[in-house]
Amino acid sequence: INNFLEMMNKRAKELHMPGTKFYTPNGLPDAKKRDCLRTAEGMALVAERLLEYPLYLEFSSSKGGKIRQMVYASTNRLLGKVKGVDGMKAGSCITVSCLRDGRRLLLVLTGFASGTDRNNCATQLLEWGYKQP
View 1: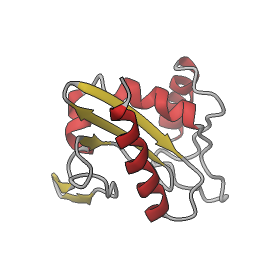
View 2 (view 1 turned 45 degrees about the horizontal axis):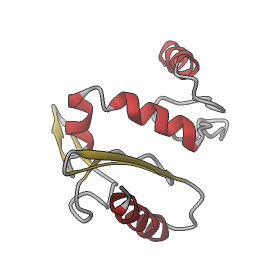
View 3 (view 1 turned 45 degrees about the vertical axis):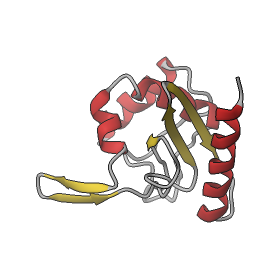
């Protein structure tokens, strides 16, 4: 795990992700209660890079499934509810990929008191974004 974390933090620096420090590979707080540090800009940068890997988008656009013996369920409540949303989600913040009519938008939101408020704002921003020329 420590070697993997070193690689994650090294890659974050290579991608110029400001204010980013990973303490766990899954993004949850570690045993010392240290939370991974990320910025909206950094999440947008990593999301943009992840789109280069079709397999990642395939997994993140799924509402759930099974990989070998592991069953998983997406926590991205915008999948299937907001036209074009095809993936991504991270913790209490949200990073969304949305594709409509050949145009992709990436959206990163943080700092919401509830997932419902966050998802409502994300939906409104995506609708606004697609109305822009």
